[in-house]
Image 1 (cartoon, rainbow over the protein chains, first blue to last red):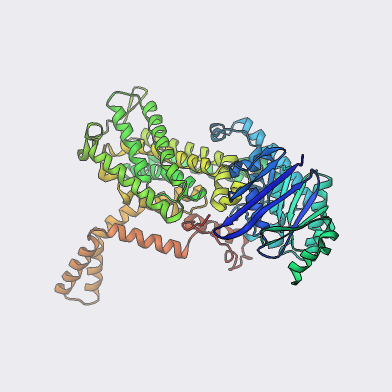
Image 2 (tube, chains in turn red, brown):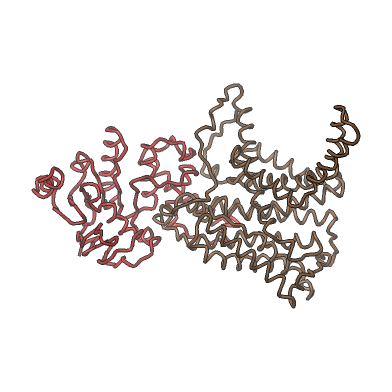
Length: 252
Length: 383
């Protein structure tokens, strides 16, 4: 059985088939990239997995558990974290509190304990902070701890969003265009981090990406989509040579 | 300028970042403690109102400032707290019990209001909370067996541990102050723990909050409940302060006053609730002054500029008519809100922070320091 599996996943908006019975599987510890032209349904698949949209039909399995009907907030609790294509950070908060929100699924304290700020809450806060600091070190974000997100440049925000996802200690991470808006160097950093996430942290990565250099550098396997359907699946070079993929990008 | 050298995670957790805060807040607390012995009874009475309004402000701040859910129904929550106190008092329930009961009942009602509010955002949520307030007002007027209808209810003098605590005395002031301080400390505790961060996350991006594992609906309901509960506690004190409550005291105007408290104080910090409360309580004597003295002064100025007594009399009459016109208070409130939203969206506390920074950086302050900051009250949200 695969680690993560989508079976005949469909998402229709009226007559528009954004995702049209897509099936794929992600093995534990691999980096799987989804590529495709604009509007191919890549981000929609992510939104289906993180339950922002309910699927029209089809099922999603994670660790052999059907998560198709789980509420959106439970997905993170299962160990699936995600980033967004257009950064969704908490703008009017510091980076530190953004990352601490990433720890939310690990918090165990009750409301009344927090009102009194009992020692258990204090200890929990310190534990969360230690974990957050590990992520900060991993992604070189030391300079921004107390900075408000609204004042930070785009490239840094992109990394902070990745950091927030990592803070939840996910087993599977969904990266929605991790390199969009980044310059060449930042993209290179990103590719190293993605590889490190796999090798050092043992996180399985599912990512949507347009930058083929990044895709080639990090991916174990690639899925090409167009019009909500799977065109090709396989190693990066196989997929890029596939005639349907060439046709989708360059025209027949 | 002071640079904090942090050596421990504790440095980011503790309430007072450095000794300067301890000293200044200690001094403030000392001043507040000796206030009843120094100030006139009128001013102490105003301070009691400041404490009550600030408590409500803190409650509303949790909901509107930190969770991003607007509410124009807080007068109703205050009313529920006040009426609970007045009702239970009839059965000789001791103060600590009906004080907590008022808060608890209001909290439960707040949670119930929170449920339908889950699907509403922005202006629609405001409308829903206004309708809730109208419903409560109507219930208070009609449910005569409990609330005594439009005739209102008398609230007996508070008695604490067998001691009478008159509403004008220093003990009552200390009680209100203690409730305010404890509310603020509790809220600060909440804000530095997971729940508070979840509130802020919901304010800034519900989608992201959800994908981080925050049960948005649950936390919105929690926020409503906490906010309403605090307002209910303030309502109990409010009832005692006024010693008489009737439905027409808890109108939409009162809810708007609470919005003014947080909007003018600054919606991003608890300081704002206190500053806004001071502002609001001060505005009333100012309006009275406007009514009583302004016509005479303007007529006097006119006379000094050579107007004859008939013209001066006319001016006096006209100004007096405007100053005592119905709804002037509401109009002035409206103008204040508009001006603050336009020119000082960060409120009084935001202004204070700017002034503080000016002196900290002196002479290096740059005029554009706050130019890029985009902070807004979220009334229109699409997620």
